[in-house]
Length: 135
Image 1 (cartoon, helix red, strand yellow):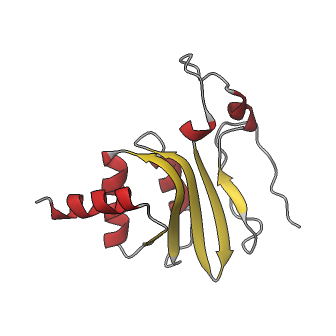
Image 2 (cartoon, rainbow, N blue to C red; image 1 turned 120 degrees about the vertical axis):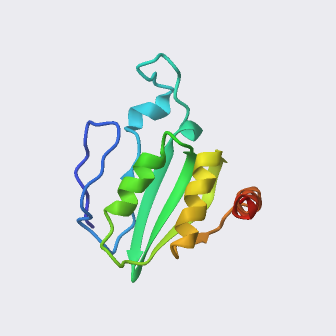
């Protein structure tokens, strides 16, 4: 079993030391799950954050859970940029609880670039279709 070192930073990205194992590549520090407070005094709930789990076995699957909004798109973009050029990447959206318009536009652009969206909730798929129909 390969264990990546933990970091005291809120968000941790690192080269994949175990490419064939499932692991979390981006997640707020576990303290955030105990209704911690952000610097602005707002309480953090588990569903208010984005967790990205990377699975690699031939292709790469990034499983997303929690809230995917404009504030967390940087985390997802960094995780995507960390993948090797030409590597097929699939986004699994099964556990996403909330998206915003910026996220939907981001997902539209990734699909246009050939990235697959797996387990896309129906409301997100419908919103993507509406965005694609916009001039």
